[in-house]
Image (tube, rainbow, N blue to C red; front, top):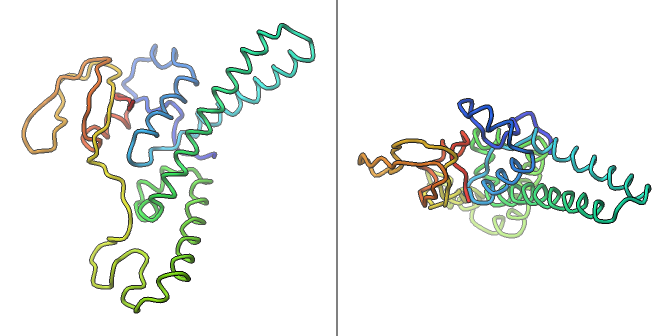
Length: 225
């Protein structure tokens, strides 16, 4: 799923230490992106560069395994290469599958929300459009056409509804488990209106509402677990 969006760094911000960035492998970045996507209630930015590099690495390792087999190399060496291939393929497939599941669940919400729509790759956008058309056609043919005209919307309960109250949305106020990547100092993570800053130290684990730490996840300062 190629896309021009996403820098493939798994959410690193410009203020992250350069040494930390260059010491992180693509396998680590892919695992981090996979975990974040699995745990986040909404769909995150598609990591296009990371996905492309992972695919290239899989192809390169497969060619290496074929060459080792042809040269009758040590079976243990071949097995280790194959384990790396299997691990990377599992993470990549699970990452992409998790995103497709979110698109299927929240497709109408994603389509009408510009910020979410731009997070999808071009292939994901095509999948979302096709899924939306199929769902609309199914609902109209099997259910909505049998209702009075005022109840035939697939977005609203009736024509008097002011909002799209039939559209499922991710629960951004849900609690998530997160880990800090570095010392962040005292940050306000409570949306109650009160000043309750939380001292966040590197490596510490917290249970917080997703919407209160969303910017920190997007900037790569927090990881979901």
